[in-house]
Length: 205
Ligand code: GAR
Image (cartoon, rainbow, N blue to C red; front, side, top):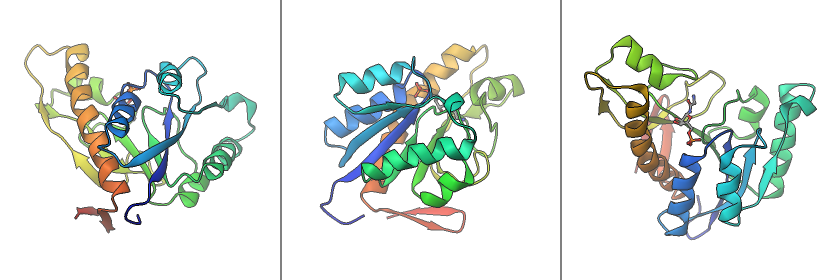
């Protein structure tokens, strides 16, 4: 990214939006030198939308059922992102697979957060799966998004201990706490132009 230029970002969410909130707070405090140009949700009832509205951020709700194919749905999202000159797409609990078309349009400019240490426990139940497997450590991963599920180059990870007797909700709370630190940090690194992808490795300058 060019120095001194404020980067427009869009955040895509389906649910509660606690990560969105952490990003909003980091932008507000000046920690992330970016502008949240748009929050997109596939769920009109997502609490994330309320968080965005409270922060006076423009929102867009699109119902997947209104589109014939996943690509048509993604095309509509992309059309809106381009209108806002969005340069970075942040998936924050967006529970939909992104089409190859979307990836092509925003190659190496889509990031996601996953609640487990990838490549372990991919999919939609990263916390529950790590707990049930009996893993001793887990924690969030921020990664670039490519055509395969939870597969792109890793930007940041944070390991936390799984304790004996841990419950899913207790673990979720500790994972979230770390997510809310590393996601804003990773976005900051991106918008400051400090990330370079070398094969599978993301080098931080
Ligand atoms: C986060 O814990 C994120 O890691 C997870 O959804 C949650 C969204 O919470 N994402 C995935 O599981 C993606 N595979 P939030 O709406 O409170 O930010």
